[in-house]
Image 1 (cartoon, one colour):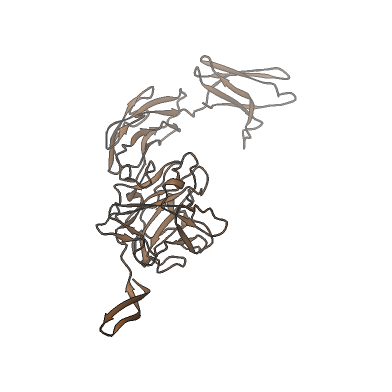
Image 2 (cartoon, rainbow, N blue to C red; image 1 turned 90 degrees about the vertical axis):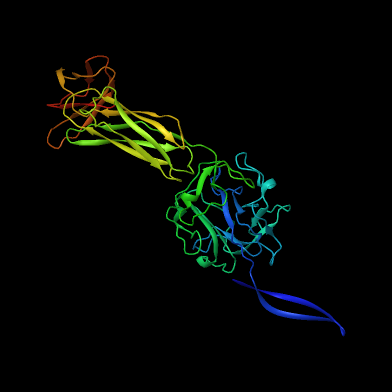
Length: 425
């Protein structure tokens, strides 16, 4: 890539001083090795001014920020495109050095780091935008909006500055990252490098960081970036060990065939190495092999992935029975520590409950049915069985023994009424 600039050459000879002015093109100094190393986007407020981007020189040579552009623009022409000032070697970045660029070098919101103190640069969109006089500015050269990252999905692009129109020419991109699905605007990760998985994200108060610093395979944002504590201007905290847990699962039994109880396994932080964990089931009140299929195996979390699911087959029947349970347990985690490693699988019985008796007078009826102690039930009625329309009678009924009862006080002038009982807990 070339950049036009004036060159002044002073010649001294026997005839005195002479000034030779040459207008030419000098090659742009390479910014290879400069990486988007950390992005803090998920703030308390949407697109808050204390968002920031950290750059890192992971190369062995000094690089220069002069003329480079930073943007979250990916094609709309609305987002701002910001340029570093300088015309060659004014703003060097030494090997291993970090550079922090704030949306606005403003004070902290109590959660985000204080960009008024920590920012090396800030994006300035012109009159009306916040401007910290102690922090040098990147200047808006295209677009309409201040640098502002949408927590629901966005991108960051670092490019050489030879193109400042949306969309940024992919051949000029030095580095890129997409997060939380890209928000529909996916940026290349490098010239010719599409993003195979832009789903990296972070909860409020966390940033996405390369681990280790500068790590980049130009293949997937999720493979390179991990949710970590923010570390603007410092080495990323990549030694955090993820906590692996599992959620309980509930499934309605059904009458025949089988259905699945789906257990969600999740990491507290995305890991930098593949996480593996073993799982197994054990009976509670449900019988292994009769009520559910025993299961065991190993689940893997590639770097960047934070959730997996395991399905356990549950067998249906038409027996009236209490809800049944079994256990799903995690063990022997590798590259993670176990948190809540024991989950309860609940098989909810959906078979009808036998109504034992109905007694009635002119204005009300009493309905009694078989129950399981502690179960919660709902009585419903329909005026007909052909295309029934079921209506709730009264409130929920909690059984205290093997039978439960409810009163229907709405039967005045009713010739007939059909009842059913459903369990709701």
